[in-house]
Length: 262
Image (cartoon, rainbow, N blue to C red; front, top):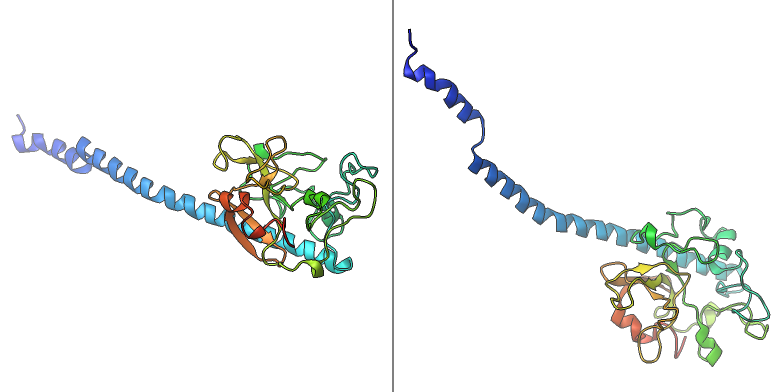
């Protein structure tokens, strides 16, 4: 006995009712793609904001460490190195006498040898970390004020000059523009000299000041690193944090590097 035609069609009707047609599936895929396209930039922006907040916190702690050191040392800031510059009578190459090791050994900050802590800018990638003097540099540094050699004002110096005479960093009481002068911030070397700042940065021990013509030398291009949406985070001598772009820093806006007045 043959089944009524309505019963023959019933399984096929159920299959159609429980499944998706190709058109419906394509519509779902398109909607998911649109939502992903809308959400990904939002998530990336939130991640960048979180990294920026962490970097600001790190720099705040680092700036406080410099200031606490000065409080304990007759108001004088941390030396860049407790020896002298390269090729001077006072050899500066000890692994223990650079500014970061001085702050670390004095317990002003956590041990510099422990990575991924306050010393690490969260925007720094592992592949960009350099190790120039036995300790990994993880993104931050002061200004190496070699401009003092030409008689210009300075903030952070070696303890001795090229002749072995006493030099040293500035005292806080001698800094008249504490809210305008770079103390410590994001520093590095550009990965691609032809793509600054978009090309990214390797890490460094410090930044140099820009030349009077703007920009940094190509031989050893130590400079501020614009790692946060193409901006650099800076802790000023008074302890507050700001974000500056490459153009502002390369032209020494507001004499941020104290080339004219500290």
